[in-house]
Image (cartoon, rainbow, N blue to C red):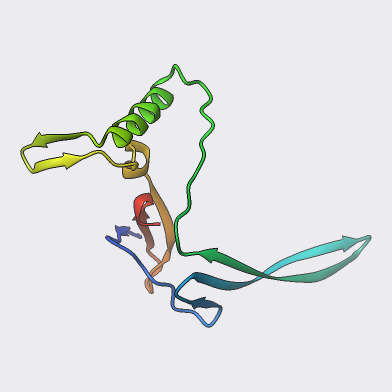
Amino acid sequence: MSSTHSLEGNFVVESDKCTYTADSIVSDYTYETTVVEGNVIKPVETKMQFKTERKVGKTGVMLVGLGGNNGSTCVAGAIANKLGMTWDTKEGTQKANYWGSMMMASTVKLGNDARGNAVFTPMSNV
């Protein structure tokens, strides 16, 4: 029986195929597939390199179904951020941010631990 656990905060990939610089993260990837030609199957490798800038840029969003719950919540969040809205809760003052309920509630699988258990992290950590 496997179990899962979640990571809190940022994470670092330790791999000879991943390099961190001050400005970017560079990773090497080999895509492996096969080509079938008649009764002959040939393995094919395609080597790729991905570069991800570490500075988070501006993102544009196209909202389909603006009248629905997700669209109206997204627009309300953008307006709350633009106005710098704050409100008091039992835990203290909260400030508007761009992490909507979908980002806070969603998780993404990072991989498996040494025992084969799935490891997930909140989408907001990625």
